[in-house]
Length: 228
Image 1 (cartoon, helix red, strand yellow):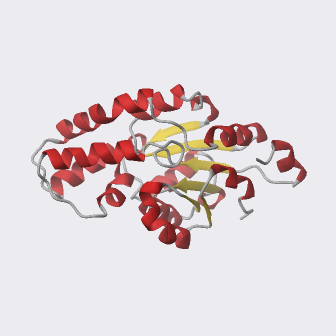
Image 2: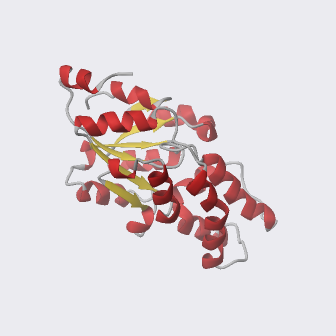
């Protein structure tokens, strides 16, 4: 793995990162997928093969809306959000691990002086608990849920708003996500996009690569991120 000193020797500029959480920083997508599909299966609701790609950028609130308005699930939004949280919370608090090399790379980037930030569809209930258990919460300058912006990662404005909060131009921020929809929307908003491999989105890897400025299979590859 590349050292912080080698960054300095190569004259690399400090970067501003905006990281997704599920499937990017932590290996949580199997838990997310299981919980989301469990609700539909328990209620006998049919869904398309690309359901996970559709709902991942939406957060719990947006997913609840999608279930009710599009899939016609006969539950209230409050009932659905409570159920989603209950199905996922224990795993986020106790078992979900960081993805390979994530912790080491984040520490190196932080030591270098890069700005590390999180923007995720996950609520703070699961997000904060997991990052704190992994002892990486304090590495981030900002830990944002879509709930903090009252919109979803399917809306280009969330990326513009995040950049403003970071006192950066949109194209000065590197956005990292394993989800095709989120990566595409961030690119549309003007951010530099680094696609991230995750097994649950591997079917869309080539599509993510096509719209990304860079693509990684392992976090250690961030040390080769281009200057753009």
